[in-house]
Image (spheres, one colour):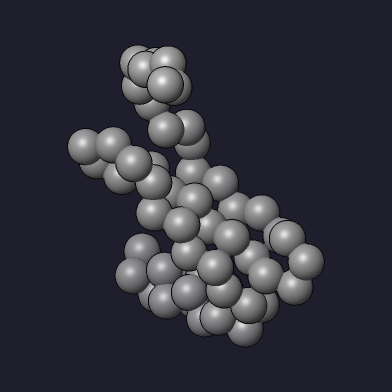
Length: 55
């Protein structure tokens, strides 16, 4: 049986490049993390969309 460990937080926002993919790991309110795998073109489009939202 695995030992139960208390949750100490899910860490900061992370973006890493693994092979040809870019992985976004975003902590969520209430616990857990959202993990999104994308290619370079999708990452650029996401960055542009975020920039448009914040002005």
